[in-house]
Amino acid sequence: MKNYFSKQVMQRSAGLALVLAAWMLPAQQVTAAPNSAHKNSVVKTVRSAKPAPRVTQKAKAPAQSTRKAAASKAAASKAAAVKVRANSRSVAAKAAVLAAASAAAQPTFGQLYGLHAVDDALKLKSSVALVLDQDTNEVLFAKNSQAVLPIASITKLMTALVVVEAGQSMEEKLSITEEDIDSEKGTRSRLTVGATLTRGEMMHLALMSSENRAANALGRNYPGGLATFVAAMNRKAQSLGMTDTHYVEPTGLSSRNQSSAKDLAALVKVAHEVPLLRELSTSKEYQIALGRRQLQFHSTNALVSNPAWDIGLQKTGFINEAGRCLVMQAQMAGRKLIMVFLDSTGKYTRIADAERVRKWVSSMPAATLAPKASL
Image 1 (tube, rainbow, N blue to C red):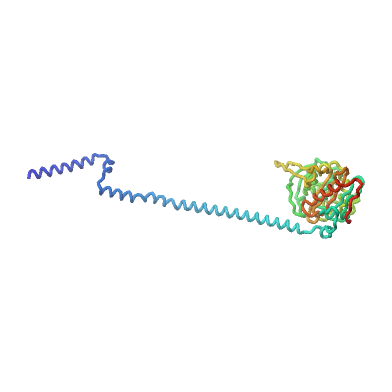
Image 2 (cartoon, rainbow, N blue to C red):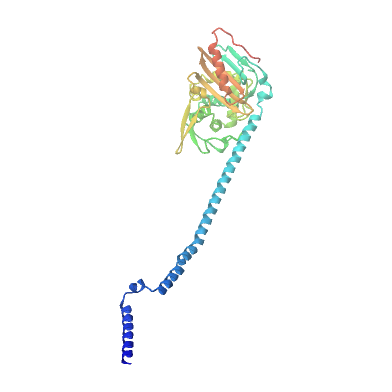
């Protein structure tokens, strides 16, 4: 019995010692060596704990999805806006093409009159042409030179001549107003309402770049106003013997501004005597300051930059009813010539016609008489 109780005391003491030892050890040492059952329990706990971060990610997913959806919607809206703008540009471009096609399809007065049916030795594309010696008035070439047609911006040559002869100051400041906006053809201009230039600058742009608003401002600022100015243009034409000529406004946008090649040759001859008109009409380019902007303007006649040409005065013109027009004073083959081309079909044909005449005149013997087409 004694041995039994001694044995029980020893077992309980050992168990108590183990409990005390376990209580005194650090926590990490206790968990460092768990028994098999405890290990399985921990593994299960860890495995069951692993999805916790996933729950957090899933909680964030709706926010990310919302942001992605918003970004996608914004991108779609932007793409739609770009598409709308592209469609608008496409519609505008198509409208411009249709307008150009419509303009090209509109016959000129010369075509309506059948003037293009007249053949000439130089095969010109202009239905009206006249070349004469400035000094002797000898006609070297003529084709429908008596025909009366719209003359477009050739008008501006008379506009400038009347302003110069009125003795108005070239330094006086003139401003573009609503009255100068083209209501005839709806053409545009870089001279906005309120733009202020000197009279000399307005004339420069009118002659060199065929600036319509500048030409109208010149007439509007004539003593007595625009109506008085147009009357002065017609009086000047009559004084020069230009009996086929009539003006209704100073730009040439109206098809009612009409003349003949014969009359325009007389105008070129007189205008060439004015140094300022020679200088401004043959200028290649000109820069003006409008506020903080610097605007560069260029000549509408490419021949002024061609070294093969010696041009003393020139003016171009175009409206649908008139076709492409060109008048010039130029020296070639030792002669001073005046050239008039009206109702030329095609953008570059008036230039090509002038080149044909230059080469033809340069190849002629001095005493040779020129062939003449039917008048």
